[in-house]
Image (cartoon, rainbow, N blue to C red; front, side, top):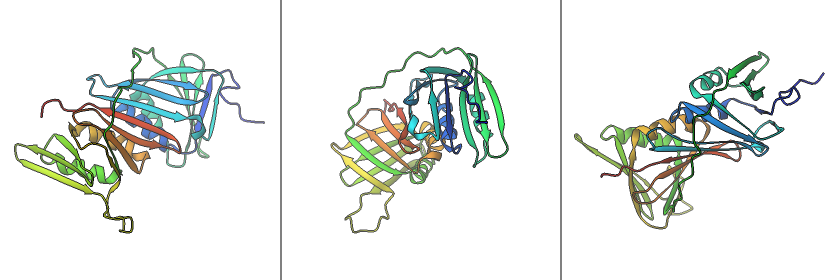
Amino acid sequence: MPEETSTSKGGTFVATTQTPNEWKAVTSAIQTLVEEATFDVSKDGITFRAMDPSHVALVDLLWPSSDFQKFECLKSDRFTVRMEDFAKLIRRAESKDSIEISREGTESLGVKLSNGYQREFELHLIESSQNSTPLPKLNFEAKFSTTEPAFDRILNDVSAISNHISIDSYQDRIQFSGKGDTGKASVTLAKKASTKEPNKSDLLSLDVQKESKSTYSIEYLLKITKAAGAASDSINFEYSSKMPLRLEFKLGKSGRIHFYLAPRVTE
């Protein structure tokens, strides 16, 4: 007999991933900013957007249905969970487990972990207290991408001196710097001199329409990179002088997690 799914039992949706990596990245990323999260589910996939309580950072998730091993949605739905409780169940998954998330009636979410050894959990949903969060309208004048390990090293190097990191973009390089009571720190990622040159640079791409400089919190960047970087080998950055920074982490084949981080106003 075929396995009975949530939709066949009267649930609104069922979404299955072959490995737990994506869900671990998603729950970790969202948990860095908010205590509870409201996910929207439609035939197109799963989305989420919210701002942290201090209004310093915003997370925006787009996870298309085509990226799932299996995705069924009878009608659009939304559910709200406490992120600590949800993430705790997702962390129970081992590296080769598949994860199935489904709506179980009106009051709970089904979480099934399977790899021969099958575990099923039912997580109580909560009422949402979140308001809709609009995306900021921004004009990005500098764009670059680097590897996740390289950016993690940069943050840790600059954090030895400062709690904030300044990002200066030029036509041929990106410079990261910080200053504090004990001194200054600086890290430079340079563009390759030619396409024939071996790729020794951690700067994967660079597009500067206008040289830009802005300063951001290292604490937020470290938390974001540690959480979302697990699912993405590279990070795309976009910003303008004294404007929010947008970080993009790839999720699966065509999904992504965007983080918007407000600049430090006083230099």
